Length: 118
Image 1: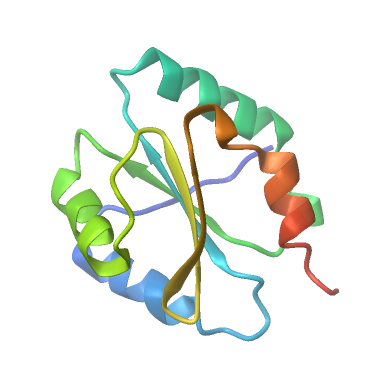
Image 2: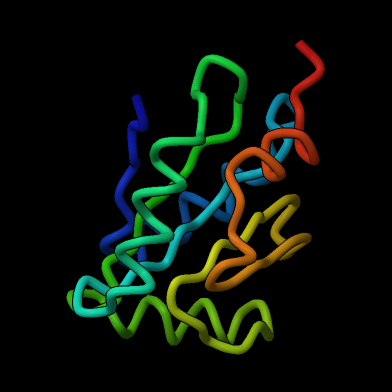
């Protein structure tokens, strides 16, 4: 079962960037979701179905774009990644090292690409 951590404030975002420096983590993921978009809803359901938390040490944060648009804007500015919805970003050592949007978001590929070593 997918367990989302929430991204709702600048403090949460700062914590994610700080957490991305943890050498024991393959990265920290942020899933940007629009609750009004059918594509976003479809992709989120597929991600939740396919993501296996028992096979990953990567924390995954959920950002509701409609509730927290300024945080999404900050992500765009900080990482230089154009805003999309839905969008998945992986942050490692304070940098965005991977991003995908729309139907390119694939939980299985994410877990394979960023498999933890333990």
